[in-house]
Image (cartoon, helix red, strand yellow):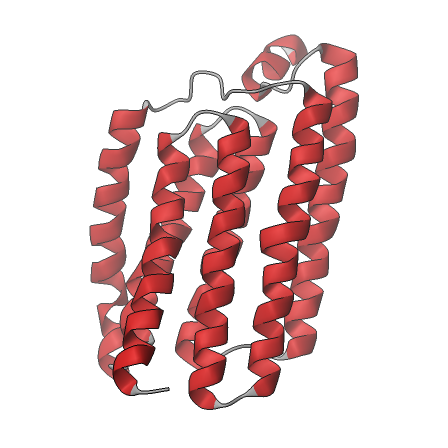
Length: 219
C-alpha cells in the first residue's frame, strides 16, 4: 500500500466514523440511530484493517474483522430486536433540540482538537493526526448519553464512546492485545443482551422506556 493510498483510506474511514456520530445527533428515529451505529462499526473496521494492511500485521487485520463482526453486525442486530420488543419508533423530546445538538457537536470538535494537540505533536503521523476525530466522537457519545431519554438511545451513546476509545487505541498504539479486545467486546455484548431483556420487561410493566417518565413513576 502506497503512502498516498494509506492516507486517503485512513481519512475516508475517519471521516465516515465522525459523520455517523454526528448524524446520531440529527436523527430521532431509533431504527435510524441503530443503523448509524452499524455504519460506524463498518468505518471502525475499515480503519483497523487499513492500519493492519499498512503494517502487514495479520493479527491486527483479524482483530479488525472481529470488531466489525461484533459492532457492525451482532450488536446492531440485538439492538434492533430490543427495538422491536419495545414497540417504540422515535426518541421523545431530548433535553437538547437537534439544531443546538449540532452546534454543540461543532464546539466539541474544536475542544477535542485543542485537547489532542499535545498528543499529536509527540508523534505527528497520519494515524495520530486522526486522534481528534476519535476524541470528538467520544464527546458526542457522552453528550448523547446525557441528553437522550430512551434507554436504547442512551445505550447507543455509550457504544459511541466505546467505539471512540477503541479507535483512539488503534490510532495511537496500533492496537491492543487480542485478549484485551475480546474481553472488552464480551463485556459490551453482555451489556446489550441485558438491555434487551430489561427493555422487554420494562415495556411490559410500564408501557414504555422513556426514562424521564419512569422517574416520575418512581417519585
